[in-house]
Length: 370
Image (cartoon, rainbow, N blue to C red; front, side, top):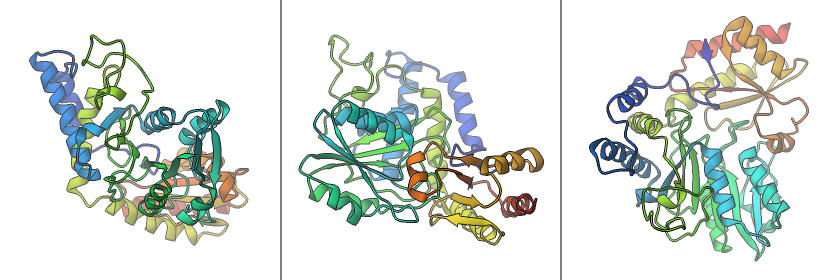
């Protein structure tokens, strides 16, 4: 199979990632922070080492401000539910994934005020679009770093500066950019990331960075291996947001995924192959490229062919994995004008070749010709 669905999860994983998970299960399978014996200590060392590598990658001073989660969705829910209360105002962009839209709508149902920041025709969200919607009640502004639908990249540093100047907090969704684009989170309030996409870790890994000094209500409550005598969740990080056993085997794999990314040019090959694919697909009759394809995502609108049917044909007839539909982002599709028909999305990875790209373009051209 030619795998071009890396925006859902990267595949294949680097050999070192697979090896690390297997070795952890075989020789370091203790529960981190849940005992003083060697296997627990060894597991704890692996988990902390991964925090340190992620902190290096995101330019974060204190690795302990990174709490692991099972995915970016859990991380985003933790931030939104941990900050927003009745009477607060939350702004989200018109390009957000359901992992932001749904908790934000739930917060609105419980008494918060929700505002949607419009995007331009490429799916870009600017500080100029955000500022008029902010008020003295604005508590949190949530913006996706790069669209999971069309790959358009937002200037989150500029957005962060604007939001802070108005006294509100920022939450950035780096599910599609962590490992692909340079991210300096040192002045952000919250950064959510997926471990299984551009960081090349296993599924079931992700995390949330929380700026020093911020208080966050936990999403889940339970054992942390610390302050066990208290009936309350501890205030110390990352324990406050890590109730229960973390996915230590997955984090062992994520550690090697982060190292893989840091040893390569972050996003270099993925973005290069995506640009090549966009050029080739854009030359096909009745195929329109949407967005600016700033990461590894190429979203295309098809005229005369259903995008889900096209994805099924690519799979069954050509052995090519792509994704058609709404990509768990109906808000973004409404903004792009594709909510009815959806899009066909291709997304490249570190192991995508020029031959893969050429084969995908040739296959879609045959499908469009009927």
